[in-house]
Amino acid sequence: MFRYLPEQASEVAPRIDWLHNLITDISVFFTVVICGAMLYFAFRYRKRDGVDHETPQIRGSNLLEVIWTVVPTIICCYIAYYGVMIYKDMVAFKKDAVVINAVGRQWAWDFEYENGKKTNNEFAVPVGKPVKLILSSTDVLHSFFIPAMRVKKDAVPGMFTSLSFTPVKTGEYTSFCTEYCGKDHSAMLATLKVLPEAEYERWLNDRTDELLAAAMSPVELGKKLYAEKGCNACHSLDGAKIIGPSFLKLYGQERECESGNTFTADEEYLRDSILNPRHEIVKGYPAQLMPVFEGQLDEREVKGLVAFIRSLDGSAPVVEEVAQEEEVAVVDPSTLSPEERGKWIYENKLCITCHTLDGSRLVGPSFKNAYGRQGKLADGSDYEANDEYITESLRNPGAKVVEGYAPAMPPYGAGQLSDDDIAGLIAWMKTVK
Ligand code: HEC
Ligand code: HEC
Ligand SMILES: [Cu+2]
Image (tube, rainbow, N blue to C red; front, side, top):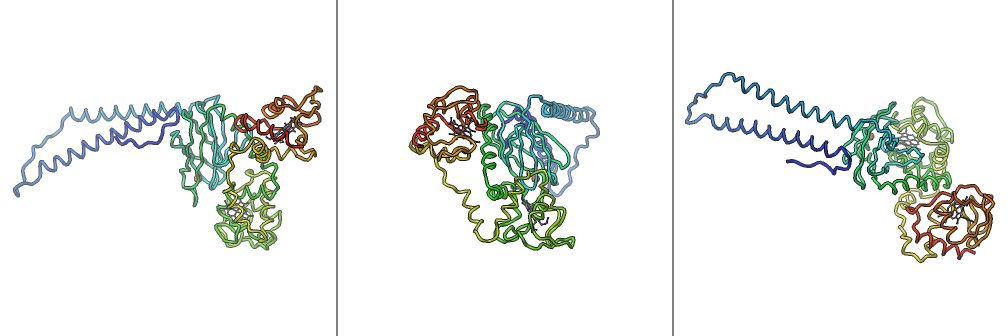
């Protein structure tokens, strides 16, 4: 009766649900019995014909007392015992668990993996393996809740808490913040992707986003972080006051602070405002609201944000641009001809950041006349850039490194480039003369 629980996607879910349903059923049973008896007696012994009828008086029954003491006690003990057993399994230390750090802040979750991969509001785990999330918070109390996994735990500033589960089903699940942590608390969602082992490995080792970020100009990086780190929730780009001051034309302005100090909004002021917002509070704005980004952003990211704010001098309609970027038409490369497909991959899968087409050297060798080229590898052996060699260069670039170059090329697994993609690349490379 009353089955309304979400999908069971973790190992403990069926047991938790069983107990939950047992408690619900017992409660429903007793509600019906007690209310039913009450209504029945109210009707049965009501005042009839204007006369009070005397009811039979029952005084004391040891048998009844024993029954309604012992039976509920057994039921409660059983529920407690079963609950403790499940809890014990849930908190058991698992040595081979996939460990992920999850940091809550107003109003987003940042995830970091052991290999250094970082994501925002989205994380992936392999199916069938225990996962341990180490939770912490940079500002206020948050709570991490994944209904489909039946796990929930508080994220507390200044301490680590943890949460373990073993997903048993692939798919996408949503996590919620279940601690009222401020205005956008309800939007503090994250997506959990449970992937098959091999796909997870590929996802984990796909650092394309980070490489892309590494290849971005500071302003571009700042713009990306502005959206990703949630600055946009409080700072507009069009002069409107949301929660904090707008970034439009902020650079170079005279700022008056609550402390009575005045500053020119230069690089140092902006840096300090981002990393230590509690230091100086802009006059007329609430203190304590802006999250502390100290430790959340590296030097390059802070520089990027400062450069981005500096770029907002009102000369370009940045707002439109940011909005449009999310709607870039998605090209499906598999609909292109092999040559076009190869070119598309070159431009969209980062090759362009390391390989030129004009013969000049970047991080890797130029693609000009690269097909069929003969040369030497770092180990002194000869090679010819034929189909097989190019395929290997992509799948396993560490195996054969061209002489004079660093082994800097990232591997492209089948998840990033299919065999058809590689065929397209090769067809296109033949045309690059
Ligand atoms: C929860 C809301 C919130 C978020 C998110 C937030 N800020 Fe703020 N920010 C504020 C408030 C409020 C102030 C004004 C009070 C103060 O100085 O702390 C402020 C002040 C600032 C200032 C000084 C502005 C001025 O006019 O002098 C800068 C620079 C700044 N924030 C940058 C950022 C950046 C960059 C991010 C994202 C990485 C960010 N903020 C995220 C609320 C927020
Ligand atoms: C982060 C920089 C980087 C990216 C991104 C990158 N490469 Fe490379 N690539 C290199 C470097 C460095 C070398 C030379 C060392 C080596 O052979 O591993 C190389 C070598 C190669 C070679 C062998 C070249 C030769 O002259 O023998 C091919 C083919 C190649 N890359 C194709 C690609 C393709 C296609 C992409 C995009 C799908 C790509 N690379 C992305 C850095 C990169
Ligand atoms: Cu929260």
